[in-house]
Length: 181
Image (tube, rainbow, N blue to C red; front, side):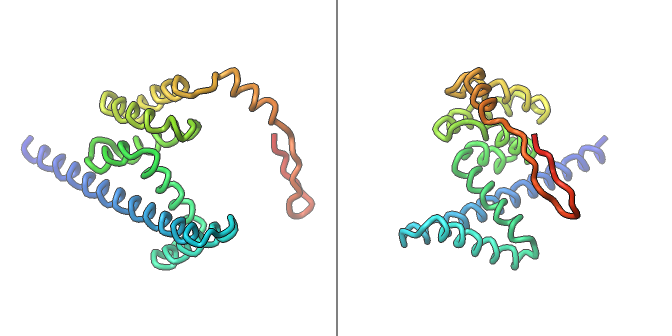
């Protein structure tokens, strides 16, 4: 039993080290994204210039880390959202209280909320994550919490979605098309 306990402790320590490294990367990516935003804001540049600044920093990171610039650009956006909208979640992740899966579930569940409601959702999500150990159980509880915090009713959101629905045919290669409903 002592050997098993020591091995479990090793796994837990390794998971904590991985989480700390992941959070450090998220914070660094968010800082790089903020750097691009700040650089463009100081020049009062256009939206296109802002996009180009973000692409430039993403390309630098991608080249240094041997990754796709589009992937890095998406990761920078995700990191900025996490750090800005879910600071308590990132702090709990950094402390080892929750895992990357918990963080992803929290961010996904809060994505539909207006920005001004995310701080309240963030606090609630971290509290729920502390009560519920498994990410799967957290997901269903957060879905309900997100619905309660949304300023528009489900009926209003459904009506807006229904009014925006459509069917599109997008031409593809080799004489084919994609039907999007």
